Amino acid sequence: PAAIALSRDPFPAISFGSYATLRGPIRHFRAFSAVPAIMISQTPRRIVPPPRPAIAWLLGAIIAAATTGVFWEAQYYGFFAADDNAYAEVSRFTQTGMNTPNLVAAFTGFHITNYHPMTLVSLMADRTLFGPGAAGYHRVNVALHVANTLLLLGLLRTMTASLWPAALAAALFGIHPLHVEPVVWISSRKDVLSTFFMLLTIGAYVGYVRTGSKLRYGLACPWFLLGLMSKQ
Image (tube, rainbow, N blue to C red):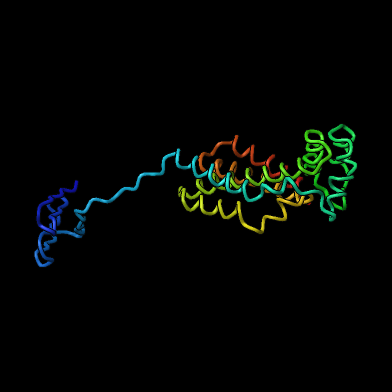
């Protein structure tokens, strides 16, 4: 075993049994075998404690509030002429809301040359819960985007073990102007919904890689399938 002698001398003495000794300047180094001498700094290493969970929750709340504030006005918008009539305003799926014939049609056929049954199911649920107005559709789009932002924050923090860079990336994701179209446009429900399921997929797979849990792997598969069925 190594015997380490620490003193006021800036060059401490370190020996491995009777094999090697280092003291003072290099000229006093004596080696009796091939075992090298090691010089260890006497300066203690500064250990940075991890952020407290309360800080992560606080940052998540701030990011969620900021993202909601940016897109708050979306709930006062109406239906856009481009595709919103076919998806929400006069769509066969949203005129009657959630029912068995609509569910069967969503999963067995194409809608505007696209196959995305989960998007149609979510729009049908909006019609049933919030009525025929556009406000309910817009609010759900905003809620999904906020959820995606928080999922990204948690995912990046888990993958990198760094809270502040993860919070910065999530904040930029949440309030970036490029997200105006998928959040404000009702017909782009497919974008925020597929992102939601894909982030859940990545989170479950990361949990499987870190823990080896078969349950986590089993969760990743249905999340992935739902994501595929949300985007054409």
